[in-house]
Length: 252
Image 1 (tube, one colour):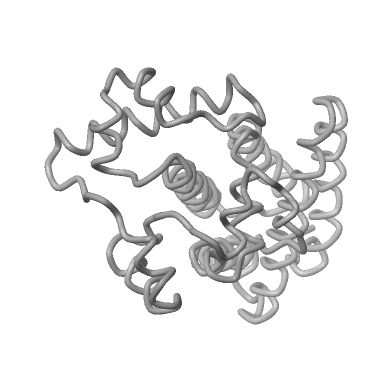
Image 2: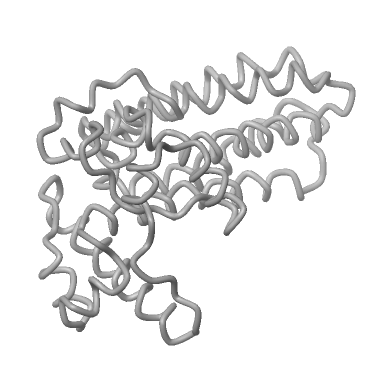
């Protein structure tokens, strides 16, 4: 979901423009985290280190409380970034408890962004697990189901979009998102090959790249408008998707 965005113009996320990037875990557990760390310079790598990793169930629940509170506040406050104090109060914790796990509020928002990115593979995998559509109408219904699932992810997390854009626009943090992008493209390709097993892998991956990039860019535009415009843009993207991939799927 790499976008051509000048996020350094966003004052509230100026820290992402190479000054003090905050901690965020890499995708895929420890292996993903290590891959991200290797791609960052030493100064940035140190800044991305977690304060404390939740190794016990109780600690994991504390982190979940912090992230849930931050997500609720971002939805309530819109473009205003919640303070660490407000997050701690909403989570029913002391500020000190929050700082045990996150060095600052930006780190919390970045971890929310990581969770947002990790929610997409599951909804795409659902389409691969269902019986293969045998005609255009069945495939159209499968696309509609995918759009319903992915659209809800965008709408429920609209206030996180500045964080997502900030990751996309910063060379130090972009590897965090790139790993998810590669996974999503591969899943789209696998879905298309599920529909048409004869489809070449390189073609499926190229189509998957376009599906991901166009869908994400258009939804970001829609989220900055009213809900009616967002829905119309969703319909337009669905139409573009169908026109793009249908010739490759060998459907009646």
